[in-house]
Image (cartoon, rainbow, N blue to C red; front, side, top):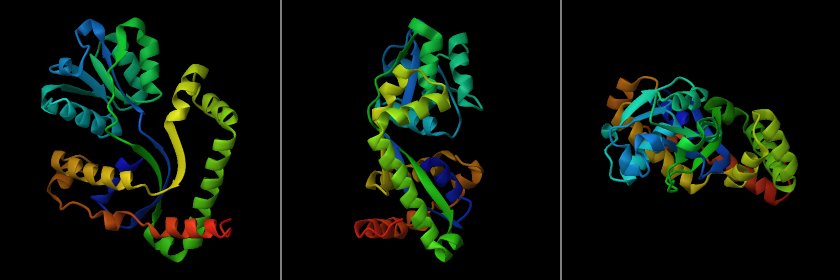
Length: 251
């Protein structure tokens, strides 16, 4: 997703994000335990919230707390290395809530049963899945990157025309329930491009990473000058792909 790209941009400049192919405005979940007295966002103050550090879930949690006028320092963060650890941690009572993406929010709800509830999520964050390449390679072999954009575009077109078959692949690959797949599938937008929302989100994430010292070298992220998105994103290849597609030249 775009957040690891931001973290890397504090350390190196030899790569570029040159296209996105999937986005989702409804992938994040904050699951709470009703027995701990949490039913609305303000009840999160002083509670233990489990999450994977420096993940999209932590970025969203900070947005969510600030949106509800809660200082992120007023909650206790409990870090886990892998998202699959969160459902059990929640169910066992090791944390009062979890901030996580799907399908782990669903798995948390399923494991915990009636005690679990999802807080209402304002659409504060559009998550994207992107293609990143070495700048030298993209410069020397732009036709290869354009071909990649084209075949991903073909895959997206197949998904749009064959949603039930695509759902079957998703369900089998991730061992998901049919009901969950039917619920989540419409929240994904399959489209090759570089949406304006991506640029806004990445600029916000740069500021967030810098202000909070996040990244592979947090101290460095906190003191270094912030990356310039013009050095991180290369929109020329998407533009070329669109032109070739318009004239029927894209493979």
